[in-house]
Length: 435
Image 1 (cartoon, rainbow, N blue to C red):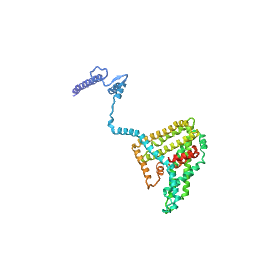
Image 2: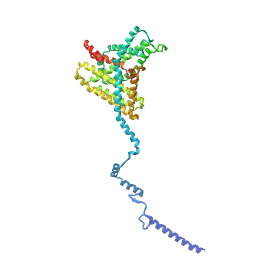
Image 3: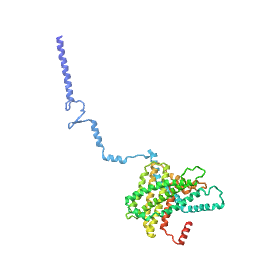
Image 4: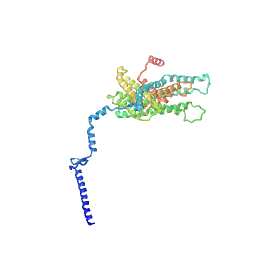
């Protein structure tokens, strides 16, 4: 047994030695630089660092990216707009709408300005004749007997009230010295005048908004049926409130005209430039707001009234300047560029404002045709026999344009600027009026 064990032990040991020799040989073959023919090495040594094959591929891919290939790809890259056809069609329609806005807006402005002009000239043409007929009826009615419980029709009462207010305010305006007001305003600094002009614009809008309510309250109080219960303070207090309103509003517009006249006569025209730039500030205050069609209609009416009022103010400025230069026609051409510049800036601001409002609120240009139709409907309704309001009052309610204060101021300026002397001059004025 001992011999067998002894015989077996060397064999095992020899086998272990052979295996150890094989493992040693494979280990030597696997080592770098070994003499065996084992598998290829997995890493390469570069300056003491090892890089895998994936990193070498990334570095090779980066090397293939060049500036020329990038430029070539950018220059030959394509896209297809028809994949988003609805979006680009909408953008094109917006551009076409902006291109149509100036024409449609100016058509509305042209129509609205003539409505204001008609209501304004009504004060000088038809209103005096209507007042004369109402007074003739009032004085001659007892001769024919009282067939109706009313001495005068409601429209005739309103006409007489308008005529009396116009006459009283005209005589009150004679106590306002235009020359003193001009020199007082001219002595102020440019910045102070700019602030004053902005305040006057805001006050004019407030006066126009509240003034028509005062006049309507007077008309209704004077023509309300007597059978109803008395729920007012009386006709006389309302009448004095109306007179006070028309007088104050006329003075306000007079200060506006005087400030504009100072801007025209300034040497460096800096005040006129600042006042014109004030129109562009209006774009900032209205373009980025949400507007519906009704809101846009109200703003359009306000723009019509503002543009017509500016035209009358420019007329007053020209009259005052021509009077100072003894009606020299050459001075009119001196004023002409400034007048055109003010009008052009007003038109440009309105076009830009309305174009961007319609763009941001997805409103088509056809809406201005609807606005013209609405104004025409108001005109036709006020011309009917049984209309519930006078034509000039309907324009005042719709646009906020009240012709009485502006008429009082224009009469005051014309009578002080144009001297009528002699029978022949008065005859020419009468013929011009009836002609």
